[in-house]
Amino acid sequence: MTVWTVESVASELLDCEAQRRDRTRFTDEWPELDVDTGYQVQDETLRRRLARGESLVGVKLGLTSKAKQQRMGVDTPFVAWLTDAMVLQPGEPVPQDRLIHPRIEPEIVFVMKERLAGPGVTAEQALAAVGSVHAGAEVIDSRYRDFRFAAGDVVADNASSGAYVVAAQGLPADAVDLVAEQVVVEVDGEAVDRATGAAVLGHPAEALALAVNELSRRGLAVEAGWTVLTGGMTDAVFATRGSTVACRFASLGDVELFCGEAGGA
Image (cartoon, rainbow, N blue to C red):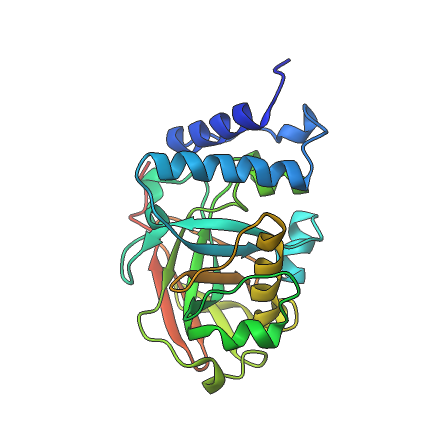
């Protein structure tokens, strides 16, 4: 049996990503992979991403909604990294050729106007540092077979990061009722799910505050100009080839993702 370490788990996860290969969760072989160790792996994979030329552009929250927590059997939200290699431009299709089993979920997205450092940051303080709010969608992926993982596994795997798209036009934070902001998720024109911003820890600014305070525990902060994905509002839908997934927000506008030609590899 392999003896896993922070470094070897980081190598395996990056290899799985590069090879479009999934695997069983590490905690079956390394029960000591807890959340704190998972963050060590996450930071090591980020270090390697930056070393190969990617740029750090923000953070994402994972499992901030009860729907996602219940589906995944994990009851704690997590913070993870966003790099420029994960960015999709509006209208760009889901990059099926580099993902394993992508799923799509709607996100309320913040673009930061000010640096925000914890500890003890409140949701109100967090919202005051936001420059604009946007409609968005994350294409989550997982290096674990059937999306089966424990908390330490998913943190190590950068909270199932894949790709994401943010609508170009945003609104000031005080121009949107973020708790009541509704999204309807459509697959090929048929509504399959809906939620409001209240699904994200009661208020998306609570997710931002959580990210800031978690990062402060590691001596880090949310920087001005960063993008913050506050977490999936609904359960994720499969990015099935040949389909189009639309996330239609009440005030923030729409984000549509074409999932690629049917029958592709």
